[in-house]
Image (cartoon, rainbow, N blue to C red; front, side):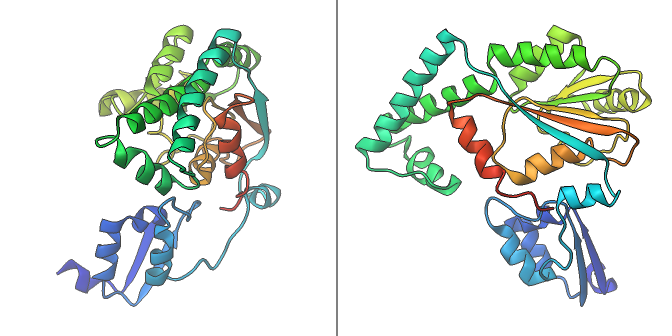
Length: 283
C-alpha cells in the first residue's frame, strides 16, 4: 500500500541500493521520479550498473579535490607513510606469500578480481586442502602487514604530533582496534560495541571531551563530526568507496586544513591494494 502513495523516491547513500535484495524492492516501485544521492556509487559487485537502469545514470560527478577547491568540503592533505616490517615479520611474511603464490602457480590460477579470489580459493577450501592452506597463508600475510608492530609505533608518533587535534583512527581488524585502544587509552568502537556505549562515545567525541577514537569499519559512514581534522588509516584499502567514506569523516567544512594519514607496508600486497584504489578519485 505504501508503494502506491509516493511518486518521487529519494535514495540516500544510494550505493547500498545496488545490493541484490534492495534492487528487488526498487524494481517493484511504481514511482515515476527517482533521485539517488551518494559519494561513492561504484560497488565491488558491479551492482551500480543495475542501479543506474532503475534510477538513471549519474548527472553530476565531482572529485574530492574539486569539492575542496570550491569550499564544499574542508581543505585537506593526504599523506601516505611507508612503514616497513621488521626483520622477523618480513621473514614470516615472505614464507606465507610463498605458500600462497606456489599454490596459484601449481593450479595455474590467476587472481585478477575479488570474484576470482572467491571462485579459485574460498569456494575450493572444502574440496582442496591445499586451497585452504593457501587461503590461510594469504590471510595471515594480510593481517601481518595491516597490523605490524611498526604501524603501532607510527600511530603513537602521529598522536603525539597532533595532541590538540581531533583524531579518528581506522583499522581493518578488531584486534588492532582494541590494541590501539589499550595502548593509548582511546575509546574504541567496533561492531561489538553496544549501541548505548557507541552513542555515548560519539557524543563525547563530538563535544571534545574525547579527542581521539579508534574504530573498525562501523564508522566508515552514517555519522558526522565536524571537529575531526586528522584521520589515520592503519590498513591500506583497495576499495575506493571505503577510502572516500573514511576521508569524508574529516572533510566537513571547517577552518584550517585536515590531514589524512595512510600507513602502508612497502614491498607487500598492501602496495598493490592501495595502487588499485588510487586509480579512482571520483565521488
